[in-house]
Length: 400
Ligand code: CTP
Image (cartoon, rainbow, N blue to C red; front, side):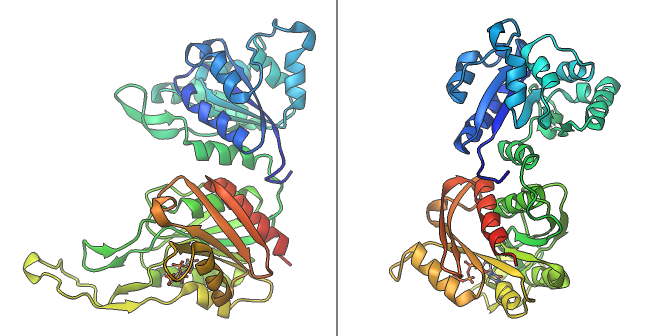
């Protein structure tokens, strides 16, 4: 099943306050072209009603097994499903599932389906840490149900702790990973992400606005497709995805050293990091005081990591660069990108329009993927995950 194939997805919603966040999940799955059937439990309707789910999914929504009995809905919905997502999942719901209770449409559908099931529990920390819940999660995992550990942060009340529903992008990428074709199995993929920081003194640095999110989306998409992923990360405020090897660096020189150390094993190298082109000629060991105001800042050029990868590449290695462009009086974003594609010697260049703050730090991205063999793929502004899979589709086609 490829990233672009349309899937039949069941979204089960149980009675937790985080149900409101799942509206965005349903909407995003539809935007990605998938068919979505929402099956809420009766308790969840106290948070979000059927009208919302019907509008978002474009389909009729049922909760009870004794509605439309002639359609044997639980068997039909379960049989058609390629994937079942439960979000949020309450402690009570997981307990019912463990015991095979089938007293409403959602629990009955789960017993009737052979599709992969992924569960996103969300509850107060004290409930998540209860021995009963811990054991139920273990039992579900031993039955090949994927149970995602909740995120940590502010809970519904005043307190904080583990128990939050993960962010939209994490829900989408971990759920879709379950059904993705493993077309990168046995491949080594190195991805750089985030921005480098070039120190001026112990407290100041030259940096940039990169969040690392696009590189992380590439890493989790490559892992979902079976690759062994090494992620070389500069500064970022976002947690890297699980299941990948992470190497943390600060400066462009450190990033180059980390990449050089593992580049020869890689089938694919993707430079998604925003590497500083310059660094201060001298980083002061002591904090530069106000009295010594910097009238002058001497900069020296950093090595171009991508250029050195292209020069030293081994046969068959695919090298992908990113181009952050704003366009100016000398040419459009696309024109600058195409000049860079010709000059960089990469197999693929992902050309980003970074004018107007649309990409850096944002949850979304759009780009032109330009290949040296002449193919151009326009990816409209959308999730960074969608762009990540489109870049990997273009790579997979070119791996010898
Ligand atoms: N890059 C790199 N090493 C650098 C600078 C950039 O490896 N010292 C990589 C980036 O990771 C990206 C690509 O080169 O994949 C292009 O980065 P970009 O900043 O768009 O272009 P530059 O080569 O720096 O050119 P310019 O700033 O003049 O547009």
